[in-house]
Image 1 (tube, helix red, strand yellow):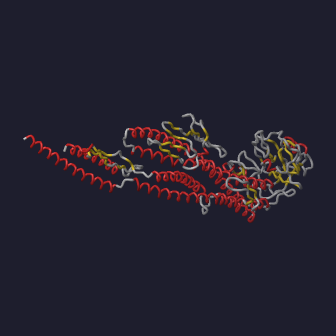
Image 2 (image 1 turned 180 degrees about the vertical axis):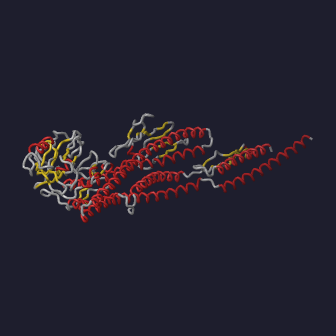
Image 3 (image 1 turned 45 degrees about the horizontal axis):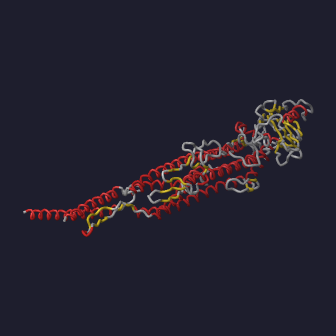
Length: 628
């Protein structure tokens, strides 16, 4: 009877413990990451007397390890696709839609339409102004889009920094939880709640980067990277380091991610940027170093080809009743320093040439008041060219060193490197054009030059940038890829201040015809003809295409990537949700089931208490009889 009392007392205690576990399940049913805890009765047998006591087993949680592993794998893929989709949506907002009028494709088409309007309606101020206004709009769209791409790279770079810190925090927490779990395990204390907390950390890590989890005999885990680098083991944690860059230029290479360096010392350890293949961080690196870099390159290539081809034609023409001063650019094609970077020319800068350039001053009706024909030869310098124009060549109309009244001009090189040609009489127009064959061209002298290089030669005005329509800062005409052009594209200020400076026709003999629109026609034809040469950049191969078609290719390819990314994200999200839902159903708390279980425990407690009361009464009655 004594054994029965003890047995019942232990059963009551075990039932209270089971009720506590069940109540905790109900209380935490909606807590993120909480898994259902279960425990069972364990009986103790003492000799021949049978069951002597009852106690509860250590509380365990119900988790399907294989299913959980699949959930975390899909979580890594979802983290990657979700991040890509998030930023592609931002890019989509920047691009606009095919139906919207503000895209760079539409703006480029508008320039062509404005040029055609000049061609058909004549070079009126309204028509010329439309060309300039549409060119300005195109520059604005390209500038804004390119600057937004740069800003996105900066945002992504900071996102990488935050994500690396989140990964490090999760790794540190995992090591601390490992220690607690091991201690509890050795002491036979339930580790179920601690395991839930650690799984939340592992879930956070898997979204950031695919990791491998290896358990040991004491419920600790070893965390390894996708490439097998140990990140957390025992009491040791090997963290990543990352310092976000200050993003200022499109050509800038941004920071690397380092592994296992000195704590608190950014940039120490092994460079592992390329080892992130799955997860949010991998997506951010892909966006920062590939997607946006490619997009920038494609925008820059469009800008380069449009700038160079439009400028070449615009420089070959001349204005009608335009400005009296033409000022070139500070940097010239082929004039470079020892590192190959463009540098401002000086008077001793060597140039080689061919053909003859006619430079003169015209009146308001387009007729040359006076002019000089300058033969371009090999072995010149800029100083020598200026001296040839100013001192050794007579004016043609006057036949002497003094021009007809109002027809004189001055050529000089400014202290900052630009060539400048100015009419000496206010209200007159500087007019230029190539005369005869071959076409007047110049190439910069290089260390290996043996004279004029036709593969590098460009028109006289184009070489010095005297009559450019589009400017791109210090970057000038180039047959090779240039970075950052789309960020700094602008219309020449002289055209903005006076639309009469727009080249619509060309010098023929000694005059420019008032209605001549041959230059405008050439520019329009060039933009729409499929013979412009685009180099292989980004995702686009080398191609002969029109400017508008190439712009459409950029737009269409990016839109395709946006659509594909959204499809991939939707698929990955559906797959993850199905697996996560299945795992949740297996391990989550069903309040109804737990309430029923609590009712059963309560009923059992009542029965046990009743049995204990009966036994205790019988014991009391027996003692009374024996004592009496």
